[in-house]
Amino acid sequence: MFSWRDLEGEGRVLIMGILNVTPDSFSDGGRFLSPDAAVERALVMEGEGADIIDIGGESSRPGAEPVSVEEELGRVLPVLERLRGRLRIPISIDTTKAEVAEAALRAGASIVNDISALRFDPAMAPLVAEFGAGLVLMHMLGTPKTMQQSPHYDDVVREVRGFLAERAQYAQSQGIPREAIAVDPGIGFGKTVEHNLELLRRLPELVELGFPVLVGPSRKSFIGAILDLPVEERLEGTLAACAVAVVRGADILRVHDVRQVRRAADLAWHLRRGR
Ligand code: HH2
Image 1 (spheres, helix red, strand yellow):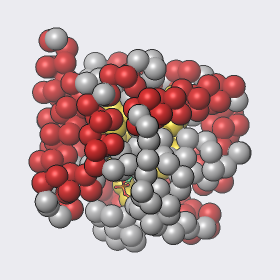
Image 2 (image 1 turned 60 degrees about the vertical axis):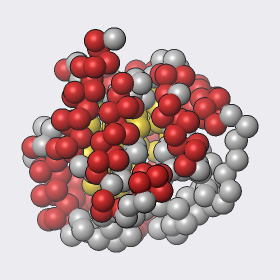
Image 3 (image 1 turned 60 degrees about the horizontal axis):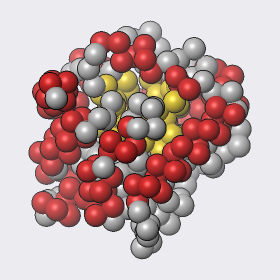
């Protein structure tokens, strides 16, 4: 039975290294599409200090078209099969589809990272419960195709918090234990620059829910908008956002640049403990 507490045992922030096995992800699309390149990338991220490898076969960038189960499985399964027995750290599968999640769990994944928070596929919750898998519940307004069409909230933090609390209740009602659940405000998923900033500033209000909080600011467009920088120039902005998130209570960071974020996050962790 997966428990976030077991992973957190080392007393440091957890780094989830991103492995996008896609042709069209916003920052690294196409780079790890071949299974061999993807496996190599996973091993490198483990060596750089990742605690989890998050494998995804469908881009969720704004406006992205959904892909079929067959297409998604054809991308992620060869990577999972080749990774079997080669990683010491757990694997999460970034998918909203129960069929993809099930195949991935059978092939060695132990966490489901569902950006729809169990909304898109009714078979997902029972599946996670049956496998005793870990679960990330993320907030998103609508779907990736529509989420950036003038997002509006009266109070973004209150609404995201209410959504995550409701989804966590639902997950538990389906038999998923509380210890298996982490929550995520979904940086960039139906949010303006100001919404993203507000969520990071008021992260302690999400920490109060009592679940580990995952944050994924890596290379995202709010960094580009504020610093006026293209996606390949957003490392320093990512480090700043990650450090602040850790100080404000984040437990898990989902990032592309594992080596650099590991160092920044470890320092921020010590600052947080000292308070
Ligand atoms: N962000 C992305 C994808 N999955 N999962 C969680 N839990 N939180 C996030 O913030 C998150 C996520 C988008 O980033 P990326 O994977 O780099 O891009 P793409 O969706 O284009 O593959």
